[in-house]
Length: 175
Image (cartoon, rainbow, N blue to C red; front, side):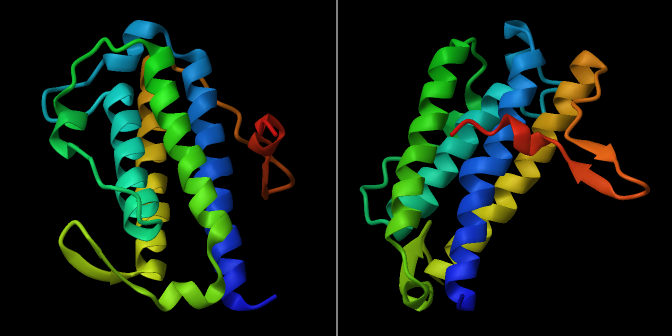
């Protein structure tokens, strides 16, 4: 397999499988009022982070890479104090993931070098994807941390396998 295809496949796996699976596991243990809880005014709630991830994926992948119109209102993602119903937040998040998955499916290794303008920045498809994977990872970690803070639970994503971390989160993937 060429490295471009490997990069696309691995990026797609992170964005549409691994990170959302971990986020959904958090949502399974959070109460509705936990979704909009924030530790202080300078921090975001899980609900804000879900809106923000959906907006970022839409702007960078669906619009920036895929060519759909960019209708993002970034500041509104952070200003929201809820409660927007859990189902509505998840609907927006899942719709963004489905649309991004369709864009990923249409890319080839050759498209990674193509130029794009996203958020007024000149970039490439490769950089846009790399940005989204890194960004999604960071906010997934924040959602996991907020969940542990609110529930005092081990989410059980990994188990010890003789000093190695064996992923068990993969069993949760809905196909």
